[in-house]
Image (cartoon, rainbow, N blue to C red; front, side, top):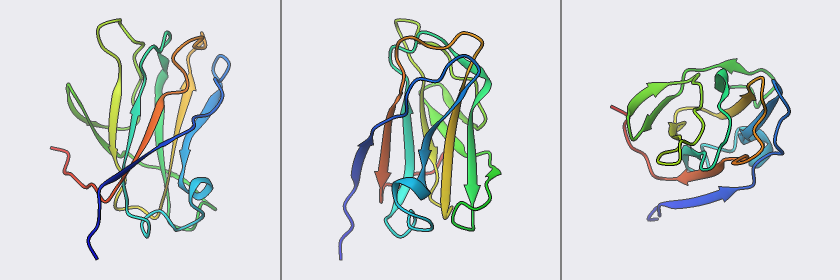
Length: 143
């Protein structure tokens, strides 16, 4: 059976208040525990167009679970951006008018993943939630 590259855009959470945390993606909620890999999820792409306030310091955090979401451990997921590559956690910058933050996060080696975003002392009033895209069967190597 031939696998097709597919993309789904998910609805994001409500805008968090100052210093609050919002869950952007939780595979156990979206697909059920331990179903993400079976469905071919490889990457999560987060785009923050119009975001008028940055996240808190290291506000974008990744978590992995091998027990269906019963326990979550911080995980430094690799990501790529226009500017290069890195690993989570990261501070998400506000939209400058000429550029906005985009994180292409590689998740293909995990049973379950969760991504959270914590607001800074001033909560965003525009540009939240981000665009959340799930990429199926579309693997690439961050280098």
